[in-house]
Amino acid sequence: MKFTLNITSRRFPTKSVFRISRTSVSAVDVVQLVLHSGNAVGRGECRPYPRYNQTVQSVIEELENVRWQIESGNVEDAITALQDKSAAQNALSSAWLDFCAKSTGRTAADILGLVTPSPRRTAFTLSWDTSENMTAAAKAAALYPWLKIKIGSGGLDRVLAVAQARPDAKLIIDANEALNAQTLPDFLTTISGLNIALIEQPLPAGHTEVLPQTKLSICADEGLHNIGDLESLWQLGYRAVNVKLDKCGGPFAARDLIFQAKKMGFLVMAGCMVGSSLAMAPMMTLESLCDIVDLDGALLLAEDMDNGLKYEGATVHPPSRVLWG
Image 1 (cartoon, rainbow, N blue to C red):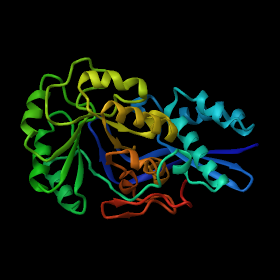
Image 2: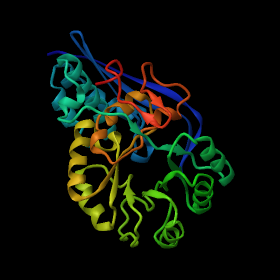
Image 3: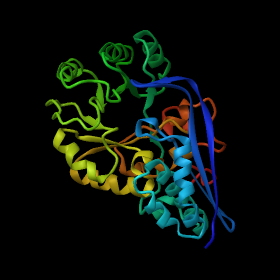
Image 4: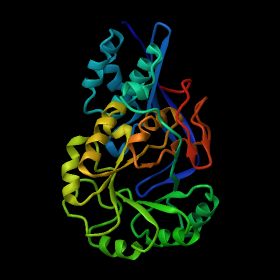
């Protein structure tokens, strides 16, 4: 089977400036891929991420390097060839799964060996800002019973302010590697009585210090890319992982990673980069394997893809066949 491959970049402005501990953006640049053969079309999207030394141009070049394999019909070989290029691999793997679903009449979930996905409650992210602005944002997000709080170094005041403003909300604290081993024990002690679901990546990925003893679940994000990372993360004291398609290489790899993580006893969160519904859709198809869903990336955009995911308050619905899968 021969394929036609189309690779494009697209910029999505965000509703407002989106800040985390190390950067802020007012728009996100993504790479979208379309696989076409006969009457079937498969689509995928990835977001090249500077934290992992990725740019739009570098990802497009990685995909162009395997164009000959893809267009000659060896798509699975091309996916394998992109093993160490996770964003590009995700775009191609997602498009391939979408194509297989569209060309066979099966669903993506069925091809992955999973049950049909169901609507889920998603967390909603509060951008790193002043305590006053984050308090206002938390109150404005009254529809969302799960809030993710982006913080930086010294972010304790923001956590306390949001917790006071929204005592009803379950909180996910995401430091994006901004805290340090010396102050982390006191930080954990101070927040231990709050309604905390997870603390994401408090220390820089690759740290060797064992995490402090705590009843709170500490979640690896930047520190998790593939199955090979799980054992060392467990030894360091992580008990939860944030699985993102752009880090692990797409829906097939994510499925296998989640299976292994669950087998080892990790809590699993379905995560995302900021991107369109096309990027959220494959991860939503894996929702049945995940304990927590954090797929609000499309909600942070000023404008989404056509036929995007349906959000009803805090509930995100599985993708329509028109969108993906």
